[in-house]
Image (cartoon, rainbow, N blue to C red; front, side):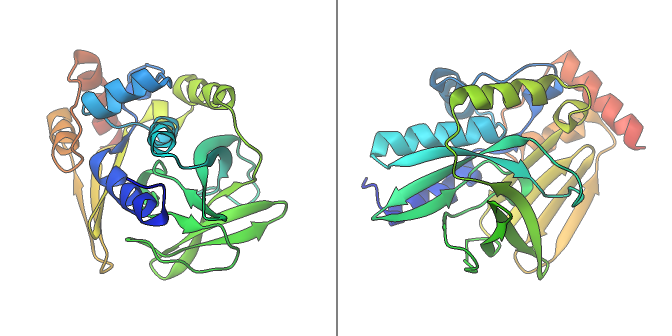
Length: 255
């Protein structure tokens, strides 16, 4: 396997199909481990998914093994964030160099995860296996946008300052322990398949298709949510009394 664009594109498309985005660990009070051994045990051998730090760090270890030059970066999420709200640099992404050209790679952005790398060129509308994306100037940063239902939506802002594992460890712990973190307060999951996206938030399971059609289902029991997680999301759910109780509380509050 060569460290070329074709390899990066194929890996980037297959990763979000095989490994779902999910927050079951912080949802039940666990802080995800970010060392390579733990990532492999959970996301590869354990049949679980994870959030951005886990997904992109695992992906970076794969890139390193193949021989891709890359840098780890950090971003401020702008998706569903009011324009006047300043967010922390709490998202993990990768800058990959191939033949003198830089590409943005990100297999960990939840329901709108990239399913292919994009060239780091401003104002260039670029196709991926799912939505079109582009990069634009955002002050001193760059902003990633996705075309959703025909309109450009901001996903996150980032600069090219290299992020260290210690930077991710801080955000990883905070998002898993801050009581108002939406990763602690509710369950979320996402998986991108060929021409389709699966999304779970609380008791609502949504299916979004490439032709613009969607369908939504609402769970009335914790078992129904866990069946969805194990079914369309492909997650080996760690069934426990704590997870059952928290899911039941989520469903009751939604009702």
